[in-house]
Image 1 (spheres, rainbow, N blue to C red):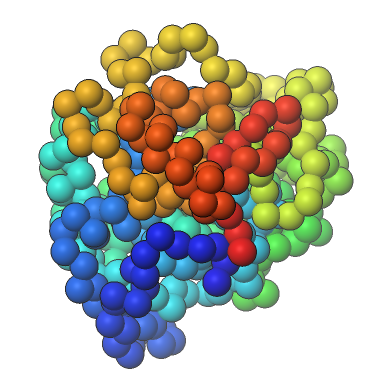
Image 2 (cartoon, rainbow, N blue to C red):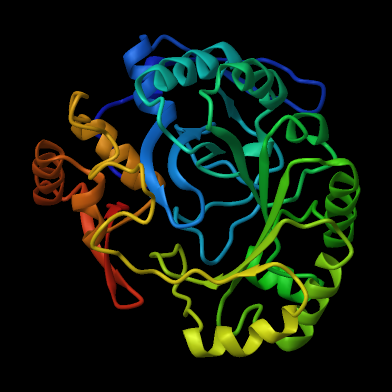
Length: 354
């Protein structure tokens, strides 16, 4: 296993050999009750520097399933795959989200992601169209994608309020170095898919360019990325480097170097947020810790799942967790299920990878 777990959620699922239109996909018919499904699929809320208070939806909670193996991935290393091998039923995901929204009605965004790539999930359209009408006023739907399947999932992506995609390379050599994609993927086809989607999409389209020293920070690659982004109606471009523990031993760019390279993106709506923890929340309506005083503390399982999905900065923990949750966190650390790892001068709580 890639990391120790607090329970055996995979073992409580019955795996049936279902067949989709392309290839063989195993359907995970869950026997989890509603609280366990919520714990498995839903994580957060967490404070996002770019989107505010975010409630996460993990469409692949049992295993990393991705068609990239990015060197900067916050998860573990894994061989790229072209389709999900374990697929949660749409009704299970919809039920978990519906229950979570009843508990967390004050979030700014409902963020669809995955332990891997969310557009590999074959029931994405069914889920988002069922959930969109249920979103509380002021809550937007967001999907975080690597951009590789915009044509295949165009109908589903059009149903999201915000679509954020990664664009770490516009040259094949840099693409292979930094994103380590499946051999079936072609960069030119990916870029064409993004361009065609962007032409008809009416929501907020956001690109993230994440630079890794010696992998994709060459000026030739950055000029190619900027040239491509100028061809599409983009709402924002987030330029940054590694600021969380990564799957591979790679190095971040300094803030000074990022500032220097940012000039290549002149004329684009560029954002370069830096990691900082203000004494008070940046967001006016954000509570001291997002779970709220009126809610039951998250269980150790939920905290472990949250950190396994998204490493948490040590100096952010007191703003994310209640006192009881902080006590659970310390228990997880003492048990070796959560460890502290240094990245870019900051400590992060990360799930132990065995």
